[in-house]
Image 1 (cartoon, rainbow, N blue to C red):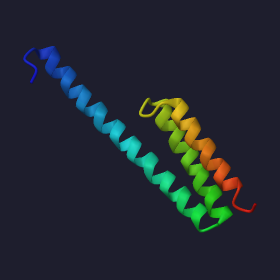
Image 2 (image 1 turned 45 degrees about the vertical axis):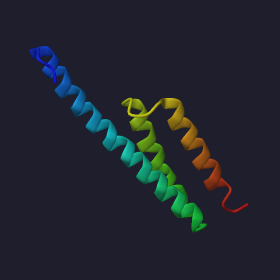
Image 3 (image 1 turned 30 degrees about the vertical axis):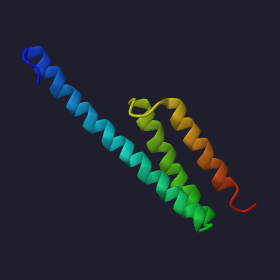
Image 4 (image 1 turned 180 degrees about the vertical axis):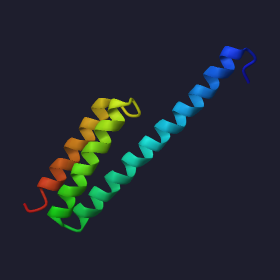
Length: 88
């Protein structure tokens, strides 16, 4: 554990940031699961709505640094491709 006042403050800040990032990553996982469930049920309308929500959540998480922006882009691309391939 930290001994200096500044080190104690930095430790508290890092714990807060870690909790915030963990919450953001969990939210990302949950919205991705919703999109995949809609894709499995072959419901294009529900899948596209879930994809819009997922896009928003992914972009917010990437913008805040919870996940890498390229990872967010890759996930969104793959989900979009899957949703567009439902009718085919």
